[in-house]
Length: 454
Ligand SMILES: [Zn+2]
Image 1: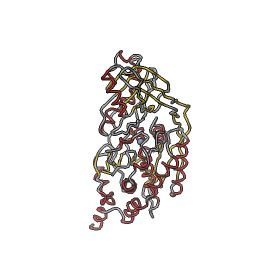
Image 2: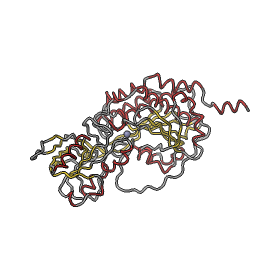
Image 3: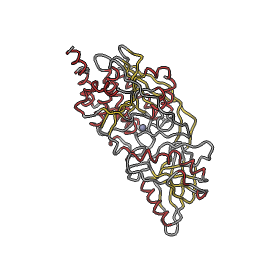
Image 4: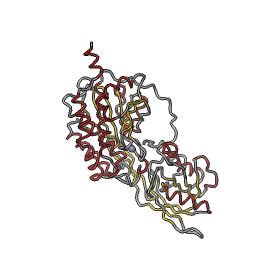
């Protein structure tokens, strides 16, 4: 009896802890993989040569790590940016100013020259917008502001077009900027004229705001972007097969695509490197875990979510046997906590299995653990887990040309990898799976929604 209690209190074999945590903290593999992905392959927007190179690279790395890996086909939108520029036109009392801007993902191209009007919400546009460029301004200063203001980017172009506007600018959704515009997906209401839409840097948003206090401002916006026919691409899927219950799956996800403006080191190269490292470490254990650990590198999270939708559709029949899912798409800051979204009692069940992380001070808590690519499987009530990193500076570089490898702290990347490896192993090894969370409340299906990930 005493022995049984002791075993219950410490179910994690010491060599598992040292191989997973010690391995992640000392190997440097996640960091060097991320350097390869960002410097050798570079930007990975869906449909681009970079995205396809990343697919082939990831497949090969998984195979080298001893995982069974395959590609699952996904049709993706293929949007290209082209040349782009903009300027404030000189007028009496106003110098000409170039605008640091970049097209929003999925925007139509075109050149418009018109008077600018400023708006702060989607609903305040009246007939005054007719024939003008609507400039959506906002006051995002913290990461929480992203959720608050992202609708200006995602729904702004159609709101402006509905009021008769010919072009749309939005202040970058950023917490800091050195005059780099931050892109992101937008969507068009099919009933309304599609107008060119771009983000301006926060500094240029301030300039427009100041100039508009003084009088009329005219601007030119030239976007060379266009949508090409859908392209063939793939999710990369790799597995460590479970030794007892191979049909029960713990899913670890990240997205392989990135925006085209930079290397996508934080978004989401870091997540890719973390889940690959977790897979590599678990595959290197002397004994495979009870259940299957499946790593999915999703394609097209940024401008369509085609990979997440394709995965949920192709695996519909086995989602009831997905015992947990984790998406790493929140950057590579210091891990602050492990968030769990499961049924009643889930946290108490999982906690003893995370003892290998005791030295890292990453507490387990209940909370929002969603990920954009996991959204399409939400009706299957899969328990969700999130290793939640410090996101204080995430939106300083998010979706901008500054999302580069030098921003990654190797120690924090390693700690996140360790936490993901331990969580995945625990979920795959616990005798009983976590209780499933209650059915989510119905969400209305309205206009296209943005990839509102962190
Ligand atoms: Zn992302």
